[in-house]
Length: 176
Image 1 (cartoon, helix red, strand yellow):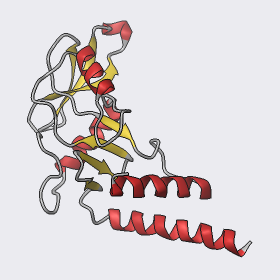
Image 2 (cartoon, one colour; image 1 turned 90 degrees about the horizontal axis):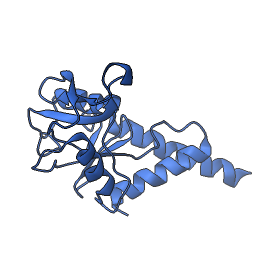
Image 3 (spheres, helix red, strand yellow; image 1 turned 30 degrees about the vertical axis):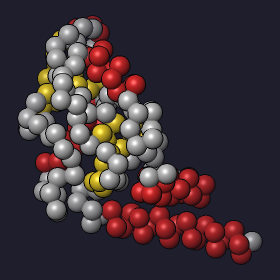
């Protein structure tokens, strides 16, 4: 019983330490040094550098779906909500400069399509310099920054979750 309590206490302390230090990481963005940036506030891992070319909606989805980066193959085009969090994080000053490369004033695709009743041929894009959101035809060419879920898109809520999330976080930082 004492071992179980001490094990839970260890993981809880480690998690609290991680959460506490992420508050000082500049909007929760950590450059992993492997071509990715993790947002500890949201649990998203972002592609650090965007490709130089622009894509149609479907080609952006294909690009992200086939991307292998930092040993991960579960990349995707971010939905509208996820991309909003990144634009918001980049809007705040970051100590030591920006963790990303290729931050450009341009539209970036989201995976969120416009309501099919109004236009199934359009999807939402977000302009990075000001966060302006617009509906664009899926055949237009725009940039894409791939994302993956590090923590399953939610905060841990029990001992097992805390241990799994800490293990994932340690692996992310160590590059394993």
